[in-house]
Length: 134
Image 1 (tube, rainbow, N blue to C red):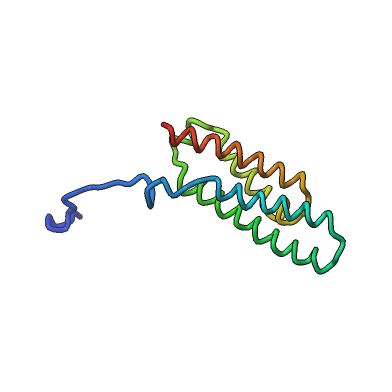
Image 2 (image 1 turned 180 degrees about the vertical axis):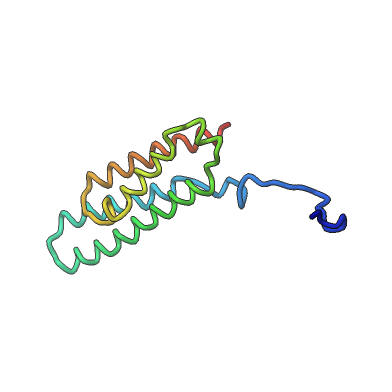
């Protein structure tokens, strides 16, 4: 069944992303991950139970924001040509989001895990900026 002529689009458009790509930046994930690391360091240096409880709550919120910002980059910014050029990019995002999640920085108060997360974000950032130059 064909659409009547008056329902057929006259102009076909396409868009790379929902908004201009200038709104994306891995710095948002990095800043939150730096907060996670700073909180882990403060947690390790303080034995007050109330302080530690507050630190854990805030750290978990920041870790969730890291995951959010990574997912936005993964699902909204990076497109098929990026994943073709950087075949390890899916794995990198998977590892980074898991490091931010319950099995990583969100569920642990470990400075080494936060450092590992920051390392993954830095790898993603390097690829991101390479794609922005293209």
